Amino acid sequence: MQTKPRARVWMALGAVLLGLILVFGSFSLGFIAGRTSEGHAKSPLDFLHILEPSITETQSVEVLPQGGTPEELQELFAPFWQTWNIVVEEYVSQPVDQVEMMRGALRGMLESLGDEHTTYLDPEMFARASAQLEGQEYEGIGAWVDTKGDYLTIISPMPGSPAEKAGLKPNDKIIAIDGEDMTGLDGEFVRQKVLGPKGTIVRLTILREGMEPFDVEIERASIVVPTVEARMLEEDIAYVRLYTFGIHTARDLKAELKKLMQEHPRGLILDLRYNGGGYLETAIDVASQFIAEGVIMYEIYGDGTKITYEARKGGLATEIPIVVLINEGSASASEIVAGAIQDLGRGILVGMPTYGKGSVQNYVRLVNEQGAVRVTIAHWLTPHERQIDGVGLQPDIVVELTEEDWASGDDPQLMKAIELLKMD
Image (cartoon, rainbow, N blue to C red):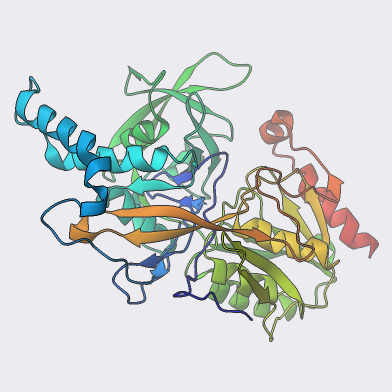
């Protein structure tokens, strides 16, 4: 395997479910791994995504000495400091919050790149992003959401969460919180308003297709983001669902596969629906449980450097027939696994086209505990060198999951997977 000719970044892929995948009670930037600027290994975070998010150690980043703008940048930054001084000295509401001004400048600088995956995380957002894939608890309602539309939209409630118990469903839009209209407000701002201490009540006004808006009261709780669900289905078929690609996912998957394989299943269903991603290393480990050998993915940097990731030895389910369930919420690390299985002819993809998150982000912790920046540093390709960013993976067999299916509790995608494995 090639090594990048600068400090290697073991990142996870920023996953985004329809933008950024955020977890109520945590911040899943799409689940990405990066490195911290402190030069020591950190427990992996992606969020991804959401996605999109996750962190490992990073090369140290040069911090300019305090005392002013570097000489070669003084002319360029003169208007910036001029504006700063005008606001500090003349703005009507004094004193101004200079820390928030600094953070706003960071946000604006990264937004100017036009890349939704290159962002600034303030300390609170960064702490939530770090916590999610480290298996920590969060206080919220427990749902994956999309922050990029007109309204904050539910992607999927977490199993057993307050959101699920309250009856929230995919595509529910939150149009008001505690009676306050959320129209036109930033999705991340709305998400923050849903968060809160366990035991407190939040009243959400929900817009659901085909219905009049209605209110739901939800008691917030401590949320532990699920990682793996596994069981035997009918006809001796094993079922494994991955909710994220976090720090414990590969370990938990291996433990569940050991138990399942003792049942001698005739086939296995890997459910990656609404999985926004996580660590790159976790994606390779997960794929290697189902793929005995071969390329899992390539990573391509701006300077043309190409890194190859191959399957690791010791997979527990490399021979069993497999069907992978995917949909529009499958992003990033999920797409790595599904793409490798598809390209290598290892299994069949069933469901709907995936999100299309083919870029790689790095988190770099900022000095003075001011959060982190998340920067797109590379793209990744499938074993057949397909670039899926903005396109996604196409399922081998397209099966929709309609609103009527949700309402009735039917799952035609799962039933199709079972049907295919029964034919094997």
